[in-house]
Length: 395
Image (cartoon, rainbow, N blue to C red):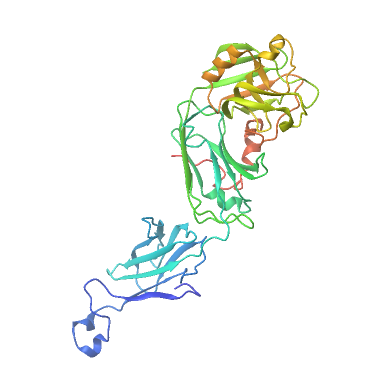
């Protein structure tokens, strides 16, 4: 029996048994009946604290089965200890939930108990990318989770995140700040994904505590996606050209004009990821700290960083394609080339910018900058670095 816990629902008899009264005094066959089964549960009453596993303990005998259900058709999975004396759930009890405990011992006696957890004072939620609306992505796309509230218990949260792939892709989680300033954790493969890989992400966060100031998660999340064609967009600032490769073969070379060297209008360099295909959008220089340099509608826009670097059509700059970098940080090209590229690309395609005149590599959270880190540098960002949870979980 657990120390400090209350005895719960102790007076249920075996199937077909009697009333559980004084069998000896009655002189009936009930005198041979075994004593009633008794269990204790670590969570009790209607104000039980969520965020910890449920533990059911048997006072005598050995447990055969334990079922902890939430009244909505859900059950907490768990395991009986080797000695048969206790059962512990593998998941935490979630906030604001009614639970029923049903246990049976090896003598077919049964007992039950009920408790209710209090609602969470504060709820944490997540934004997941790729979401279910993006079923196919490129070879550089990480799994990215941004949290609404701070996450102090990073290791505990990471333990409840699982990536399963169809080909045992090696990868690891890494924590850092998103461009928004919120906590973020990404899962990056060791190498770029292989085309055709199926990926499933399970975020078993219901009942997990974010830590001080973050609140508790009250639901699980999941997403899945497939890795599409191996497409890479390689921009050379020195030659003013973009080389497009598919499955290792060059399929197109596009004259471009990138960011003006020597200041804030320079392009970012390094390995980045095509974040989204946004199409025709309004670009206003004041929103990215460049004064009143421009304010126009831009076609075939493909986002590369949160700070506003795009690949897009720039017909007003046609005289500089293939000749000079004179844009305000984006990679511009002709309408025809931008239209074709927009039709071919997918979110998650690798974008790599090399050559002189850039303003360096963007911060890791300004888009998907994790590919600029070595594998060892990336693994060190796991909250479980050096432990069993720091690497991937595959099926």
